[in-house]
Length: 361
Image (cartoon, rainbow, N blue to C red; front, side, top):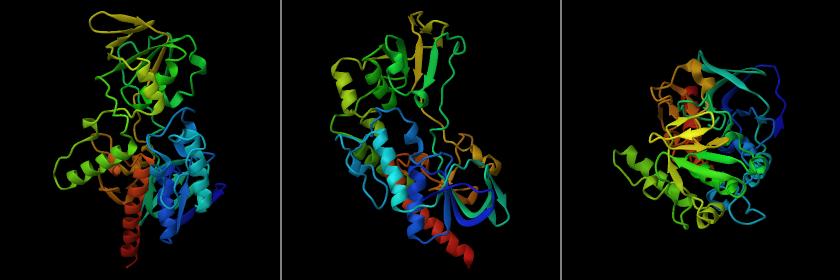
């Protein structure tokens, strides 16, 4: 159930910031627990970051392993792994199915301490909550590393977040930077219409064809559980870096997935390596990841030296009334994925409800 924002301040027990996959998973469990809560979403429509992904993007797991709590994602009409559009449709239907109290578009500007509550300042007024769950993800903070000469490049530079398909790349000379799944999928697509060069900081490794997001999530979970008791466990990197979804396998079979070492500087006409080798190009695509969108939490002064907020599970160590959900392994095993967010949300909401009961005593 989506509502229009109002300028009137309101108080709730739990306020969720972000209406993407993590926010909806939290909403499901809060609804089941009978909590007094609301979800604020900055987007005008449901679907979270998936609404902004490029059309050909594919999940790394089948639908039944990419679902939020309570309702399994339907298999894609076209078969195979779900696309970005399939995921948007699922999240939209999920929100309606459980009548989650999502209010949009509401942009959260700041979260501050205010007595026994947290004060949440938005472009639609002020909210007060006994507990805040921040679930804003990372899509809104694209990361581009600095290289000498980056400002001199005369061609086009864009990040994964700006990529919307191959239509505008026909006949261009493109350098694709990054050794992860996004780089491999974009390379597979662009190599059919443009001259492409792939550069990575270390040789990329494709996972075996039979390994997908299911195995990756299980590995992340085992590694997280081992870390909790001071033990080590095999990491995801032991298997490889890139899931061999069908477009990537097809590109591999065409011989496209060959990476060059990372360049050391950028020129006005292309890129250059330390040995003097140069490559002319007119486009650079930075598939270099994202940083957590935590700007709204700055007034709480919680970040550590690494830029992240130290947590015990999902609860912020420096502010126990704040939970962080869906930002990656530091807030739960694979919690930036659909299934990871679903499982982490269940644990987080159980703790939230315990906190509310304890506070009421």
